[in-house]
Image 1 (cartoon, rainbow, N blue to C red):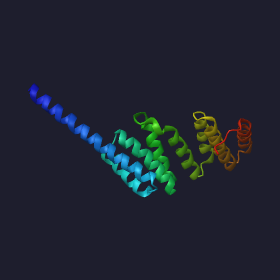
Image 2: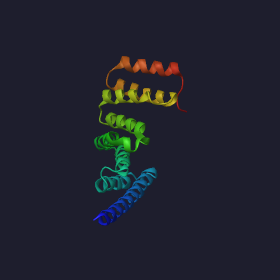
Image 3: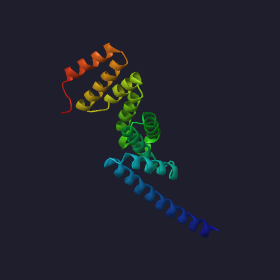
Image 4: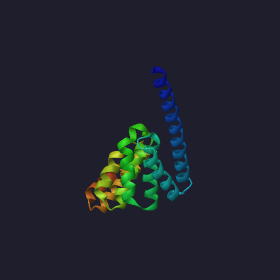
Amino acid sequence: ALIIVVVLLVFWTRGRTERSLESNVRAEAAVGAFAVGEHQTALQMSDGIMATYPGSRAAVLAAFVSGQSNLQLGSFIAAEQGFRRYLEASAKEPFYEISAQLGLAASLEGQRRFAEAAALYLETAGALPAALANQARMDAARCYRLANSYDQAESLLQQVVKDGELLA
């Protein structure tokens, strides 16, 4: 009986490793498609990964690619869902967490939810280096202006001018 358990464990581990490798290869392909501007293809690949390998690191990365692809395609609600799905599971693949937060903010802005977007841009700015933080503050200021919160927008822009660091 012990031999049967050991054999089953070996086959299960081997199958799991092969499945993990396969999911990682598919995730890399989805990232590659996104990187070359094939957003619809990347989206389809990501959806397939999330359906086939739920809970895996590849599925977490696929959620991020889904959010980014939908954002590029102008599907802001779907982008929001992808970014939220990624952020809920990002402990498995935390590399893109800040980018996902900025993407989520952009998707909220695309939905005309300006006050929410501004708050998220501002929250994310705290985790960024100075020039990137100021860019996020400028994004927040734009959203506050669009939300008719002119005083908050002005305050952020004054802070950016005072800091003086922006991306070239």
